[in-house]
Image 1 (cartoon, rainbow, N blue to C red):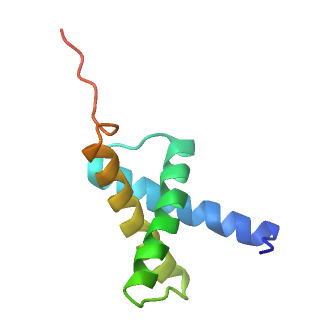
Image 2 (image 1 turned 180 degrees about the horizontal axis):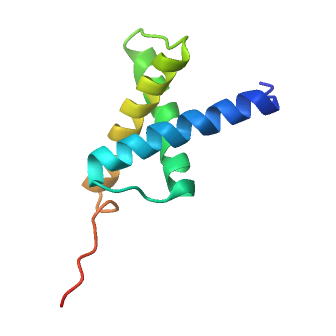
Length: 92
């Protein structure tokens, strides 16, 4: 599979938007620019796998964003289940 510079920028953009939205929905705050991109890109792969499993395909940019967002939400839920998504509380 060949990925040109434009496709890579689209993947990073979709990952950033999906990760940003998912992290704000799930935690109320973001994880930072890089982690939001990572969560979004991994979520896009997970969402694409789940969409293909139920027979859906995302062909437009909006559909790709929705699939990536749903995948990022699922990823953050799984991370929270294994204890990696817990927030730290500071004791005063």
